[in-house]
Length: 111
Image (cartoon, rainbow, N blue to C red; front, side):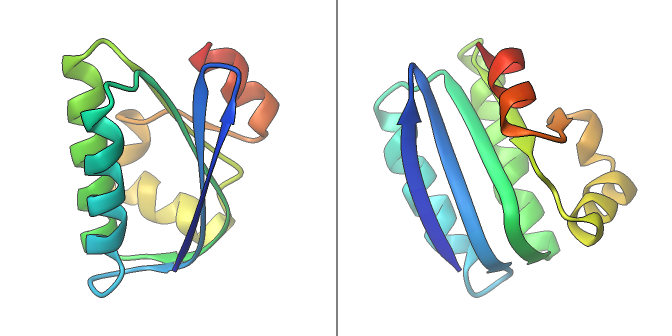
């Protein structure tokens, strides 16, 4: 898994590439933990290159959603591939973290 972080205006965009599973989830969890120490409040996960997500990966997203809620932050996901979208839908996580078809739509929602 690879993580690329960019800043677009006041929104932190995390582009995740590859597989998010039990092996790679701790890496994302650690990077998010560092970001949360900086008190960020606007976050978009760009998942157009995320090929697979396991329950360990879902747990990282759940933790991020809970932290963002406690700080009245805004969180969204964009560009989910069909298989990844199905995992979020079946697990019910799609109701916790809004998903958008484009980065532009996610940016407007998180702004």
